[in-house]
Length: 217
Length: 217
Image (tube, rainbow over all chains, first blue to last red; front, side):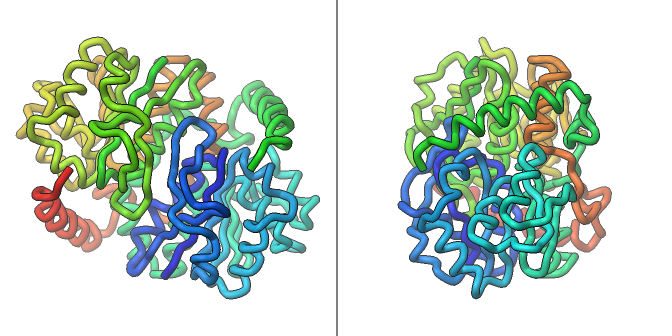
């Protein structure tokens, strides 16, 4: 079972690594890190992840898992990654995303008329891509599964693991990564965090998005 | 503020990336991925992370964050990483670990007489290193903070972020990574998972640890 995770510059590392850590533990799983051009990709905070193969090496993965990050901005107009997503989706068993990865699914034309989610700061942008934005953490629509921001990919991947291999395998994976969350605060969603923090972060994200829109891919 | 994260082959990616995603968002943070020999490091499941610098480039980081993984086995006897951990700890503000990273802190002699935690499957091994094993998810002992298995590093890093920069900054980071956990099961600790799954995973981990003990670093 090939699980293809496309990488690109200015990705958010945890978007990719959360689902990777879960899905790579599925029986028979083979994770393939792919890119328009293989090689080192710089995440948004100084970490380098390596894409081992070109997109063309994995044309028909069983699972597509598209991570997000500010780097998605430069990939919203026609390009080989969107072409690959569109083509691979024809034969995939599951087509999934984390965070702003869903904007790429949308730009590839896969979300028209479907419910979908993304990072809470950009939820409204899904509508322009023909999707129906929803703030649920994991949104399943047939074989398309989108997750909310960054860390939501872990919950999405466990949900997917259960669909693919059954509840017991998913529970064993959860136990293996000791995912018994105990955050010191209850501030992980805009409904729960203090209002001032929500507004400040929304402003900062929008400002950064505007500068990223023109950056190279 | 330098945050040094040592990488090595056969690391568990999420051990490093969970805290990285949190700590890299602290004001003034500069994450430095270091290794005995810089370059690409293969995680335990086909992902390549890049260590940009040798250990010697970051002798006095403000924060040391040691991830775990089966690769820790080959690093338990005297080697340059343990020497670096021991020396860097002299001047660090915080010395931290995730999962079996605490076994390296222990092998470096830092945990004698202290409470500490690690992945639940190997908790008993901390005692042989002079520590007092505890199954709390995040264990603070002065400036040494150890976290339980894999995903616990996210909770540890948020705790640390609050200590360093205050509750509001930590909450803003939690909101930024939308860490509002909603796992589909409640099976993330050996106290909560079905007994058969716990025993099966314990057996498999022990078998794998025995084969890893002889592997190269």
